Image 1 (tube, rainbow, N blue to C red):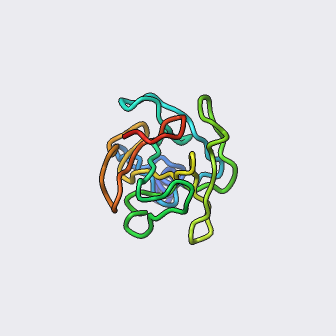
Image 2 (image 1 turned 90 degrees about the vertical axis):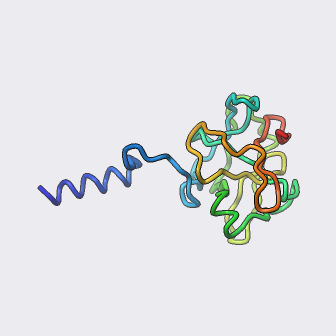
Length: 152
């Protein structure tokens, strides 16, 4: 009976059941979607980009549009990269022509929108937007509109 309880608990955690009351926080591993998607959601900043799991996406002004990311180490732990193993599916209102990918130092691909590499904030859950305009790691973290402009 004790083994069965341990097995059921472990299976629930692995399946994403998590611990009751725990916030859903992305990690570097959890943001590499096998079938990534971009969608728009209404927020107090207007309609901005979210991934397919309802996590808001940010651009970092220290990155140059159309260039590789400058966010590594502690920066990438606080602001996990939105990785993609394949094509990114645009949902209603997202412009396919603005979606891209850029190769990072480790060879993995980071999703970009209008040339801006995309990130999450590690301590936000689904549908939360708490870090718009945060100045950290040498730049501002800004949400992204459907037209690819950053919300300032």
